Length: 347
Image (cartoon, rainbow, N blue to C red; front, side, top):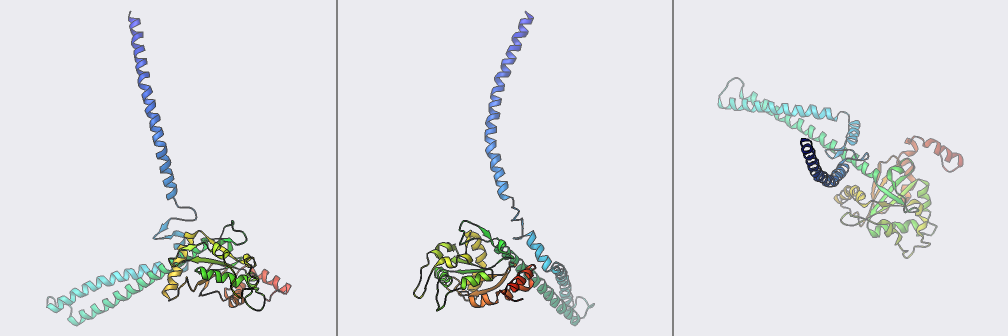
């Protein structure tokens, strides 16, 4: 009897355990299904917030690499900022006590320091505060301008273009370094189409050989189509829609295709060109109507900025010497020596 009772009690506990275990599993399953999307969402957010290798974490709007480069270019700037900043604080403290001494001497509260001596000390401290503060501020502003110049150079290097002969191919301007110079020609629709005609048609009595001359000096022309708001539009479509004007003989866009590349990635181009357009407008030029030319050297730095259509004769004729590549680019000696031996150029 006792044995039967024990078996019955055990069976009841077993069924109770089974009855409670199933809902627990179901709850666990439901929780897993709910948590999974949440975990996935969190993971995606973290990945989006994590900087890429090409985009390191920003410190005050500039990357650590950019700040390091600025320190290399101006190694004593931080030391000067610390020294003159501390001097400014010290001069302010001295000025405070000098003013107290003037007040005491003027009211007869203390005869320790004569009034004329207290006033002289106050004047010296005022000059010291102004001088140290001005030096600190100017040096700080110079550092910020240098950082912006370095950051602008980084934006320039990351711009993407596609050659006219290979529209599906993408190349950053960094890939043109050492091998090519780049002329970024910025302007409105009329400007871009005028540029296309100047490179693709015979506009003078003789044959137009500009494309061949541009190619000979390793220059790549990048027309950038912008509007009044600074938005970058499809320069390739504008270029291809160009038709010959009166006086344009033998017009054919294929004649200049080897030396032309079109911008890709409008947002990056707008970010880079924003400062260039603002600078041009501040100097009284309309970059959309008149146009703006930015010539980039083989080392990736800007050689010059021009307004209007590119002066091809002067650009092509002086390019080898103007950007210093003939004398300053390592590895070019062999190239120019080969040209001289073939009779194509002189050392």
